Each structure stands twice: as structure tokens, then as C-alpha cells.
Length: 41
Length: 270
Image (cartoon, rainbow over all chains, first blue to last red; front, side, top):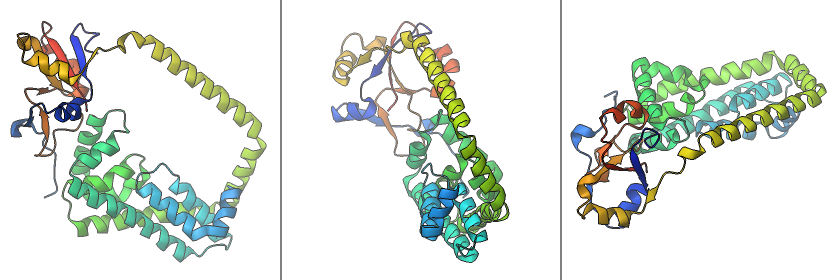
């Protein structure tokens, strides 16, 4: 869809797992970015 | 139907228990049909009603409790796995959670009658920290209702079901032809759809090593990393590629309004 809209988009082969396996830096998802889901308690 | 009835007559209780348990664990098997056949077997005097009912309810409680516990301790990872089979995994998790929360524990009473919800309800209840005793109470009621309804259908309509099965056998050839034609038509439609969108399917891919090199080069300011995963943002221990930003995959039409067209966008969805 991104390419259809004219964006220069690429897919990272292997995603986060491949990125980690290659020893590249990751970060924890910031609290503000976490999606809050409802709980019963 | 007659063949299933004969099988249930021979291995009755075990068969019903296994099929019902399998469906409770999320496998695509017709537990309702097994219960209907079980009810018909009871009407035929092949099985005992109380034993059948107790086994069916026990199987559902066992399967649901396992998914409840898994949901409670695996967070949303289990839901993500179950939702992967759906068309929109993101919507699957969020909408299921919100719908479940709005309707509350009563959802468990009727969840088994709704395809999709029947498998999602127990792990959702676990993930959303429903108290185990409350879950068991409502799940027991829901499982009992489900078993009673379908066993009753089989019990009351045994003769009608037998006629229906016989009718299907008689009309077999016609039904087969219509089914084959429908399958061919559907396959042709899918091929047409695939060819129509083929030009957009060739999305350039980049290896992580190449991307890592670009990120330390002078081109790094022209790069944007986007995380379009469906369920990496629910648990506090979640991680992402450093410097990436989250994009809601099912809200892409809105998100692209603010995306830069003068930069290279690298996305990852796993």
C-alpha cells in the first residue's frame, strides 16, 4: 500500500528477530507507546 | 450422519470428549455436530444422557481452563498467536478485548455459540485478569448451556436428521457438482485477484546487515524505521528496533498522511 501511494518503502528481511540476531541495537517500547488494554481488576 | 452415529455408538463417549476438547483448544473440529450426534445416540439408546453431558462439559472446562491459564501467564502473546489466523490481527485483539470488557463475564455464557469468539473468550478472560473462580462459574454455565442445546437438538430431531442425511445421500451427485463448480469459480476469482495486485507484490527487501550499514552512513537522515507489527505493544517487556516508530497497520490510510515522502521507509512486521 505504501508503494502504491508513492512511498519508497522496503521490508526488513527477518524483522526484529533477524535484527537482534545480528547484534544490532534494540530498545524497550516506551510506556507511552504501549497499547493499554482493559482488565477486569 | 449415519456413519457418525455408528462411530459414536461404538466409541461414543471417548469420541465426543476428544472432539469437544479439541474444539475448546482452538482446533477447527465440529464439536456441535459431535454433540448433536451424541444426542441422537442417546435417543437411540446407545449412550447414556448424564454421562454424555458430564463428559462434554468436562472436556469444555478442561480446554477452556488451559487457555485461561495460558492467557493469564503469557499476556497477549497467546492472543496474538490465535489472532494471527484472523484477517486483521490488530483489530482481532483490540476489538475482542473491548467487546469482551463491555459485555463482561456474561460473554462466557454465549461465547461458545459464536465462531471465533468461542476460542478467544477463555484466553481473553485470563489476559484481562478475570478471577479464576468467576471464570469457572461462568464458563461452567456456558459449557452446560452449549452441551444441553446441541445434545437436545440431536435427541429431539434424530428422525429428521436421519432423513436429512438420507436426502443428502440421494442428492449427492447434484450437491457434488454444485460444490465443484462453486470451488472452481472461487479459485478463478482468487487467481484474478492475485494477478490484479501482482504488480504491488514486489516489495524490495533489505537484509539487516545492509540496513545497519546505511544507518551509520551519511544517508542515515534519509531513513525512517517503521514497526508495523500487530501485537508487539501490549506487554511492558516489549522491544523494538532502536529508533523505530510504531505505525498502526490497520490504520495505514490515516497514518500515511503524516509520513515523509522524501525519505526511505523501512518496515518490519515480525
